[in-house]
Length: 194
Image 1 (cartoon, one colour):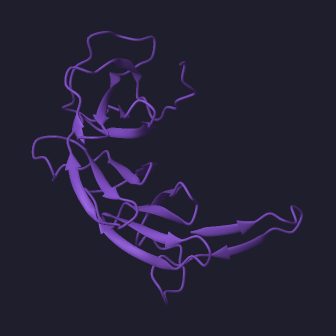
Image 2: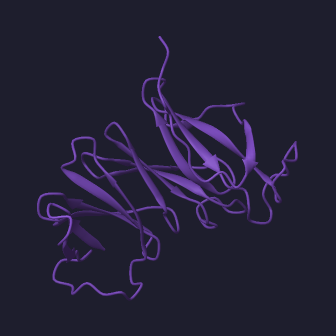
């Protein structure tokens, strides 16, 4: 993992950050870090480690390792919603037998594992809507065995879809499953009307 200081844009200061204290950073895929997401106060950040099935929390000020928390198999997309971290594990074929994927929920303050939720086939995009109390999950649905789409799109392949987690109960909201185009990877909330 690299940390790059762009204060002098013509001479950026590039540093390698070890994911394990005392380790010499290497390009060998020991952890297979996939994505970084910063806590709301920016004091720490979560790194998804696909190969070791965990989230590693590091302190922003000195990049020290704070905690390692187990997730579903192959975590990819961590995203904070307030003080809770939601982690999409799209290719997890272990946590919910016969299914593909899970979302791991972690307390972002205490770094305690809370639970795994089955949200649908191959969850990837994690889109919190804290104002509405939902975390939308976008499902790629590209691996064989996923649900057949109701509609076809102009794109080649099988449509994906969205589901939503209730942030208060940490359960899937029933009967919410809008279909999207092929391989929805990520999304964003742009604002709210009051």
